[in-house]
Image 1 (cartoon, rainbow, N blue to C red):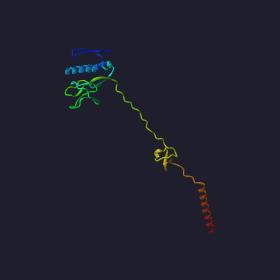
Image 2 (tube, helix red, strand yellow):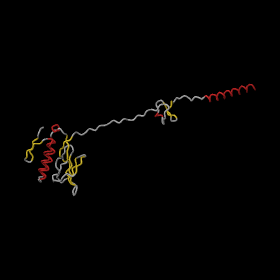
Image 3 (cartoon, rainbow, N blue to C red):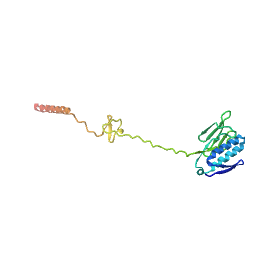
Length: 204
């Protein structure tokens, strides 16, 4: 694996790309602990930018960023939130002190820490952003009601059936057949009418 050699603050450093975030954090903490605010800014900014300009193929990872563990005044990180940017809270009371960083580069976006925001967030190793997958949802289909089945509308019946009296039936259904009893009664009526007609003719 290729090494990067950088001289910062009079010290020659051999830096592995994968150890960039640890180096940035440790050197920033060391400089802050000694009260060397300017050197802390130069160290963290130089090393973080060195990692940023290194091609992704050389590091084999994607760019992700985390809040610096302390600000340049030595205040420890209280909380962090990642949304449209990286929000790093270093004090809540008595003053609301925070820093905001860009997600794609890690560079400082907003200094609300009285000028004590580190210029660059801490690079971290992370994998590629997962690609969302979409699952097709089956659309339910209605099975047409066959002849003789129950229905509420003609649209429920199989073509060319129609819904009549809540029953799917043919639109050209034959007229109902007369029962045997009905036939006998009808025949009797016709016979009686014929007999009366013949008797009237004879009387006349």
